[in-house]
Image 1: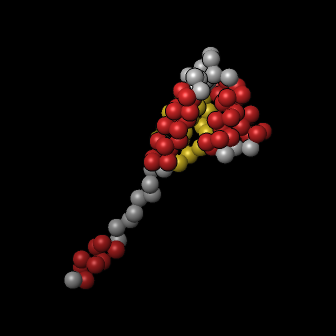
Image 2: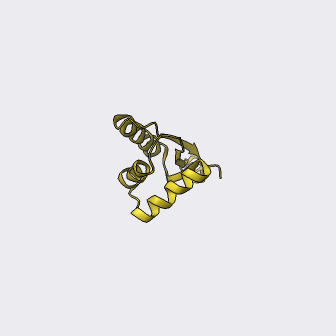
Image 3: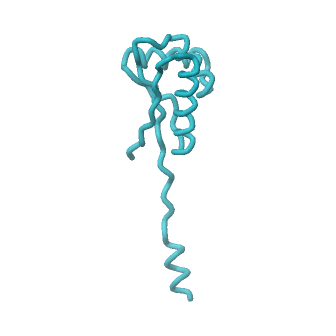
Length: 99
């Protein structure tokens, strides 16, 4: 019995994978709407949201947050649904972090 207990106690738990949630630039979504999305779904302060929005505008994309898979996927869905509801083409994707 002690061999079984010692083998299982030596197993290491893996940390859960983490995913970046990324907003992508487009030629139609207003900057104000992007700031609103960052404040509403990612709980960013106004100045931080504006800085991230400018990064999206200049670089084509920016990370809005890093989460477990389920939370990241939920954020992506919320942002896309809200964008379509407001007739905006804003795209949101998730990308797995590579350690």
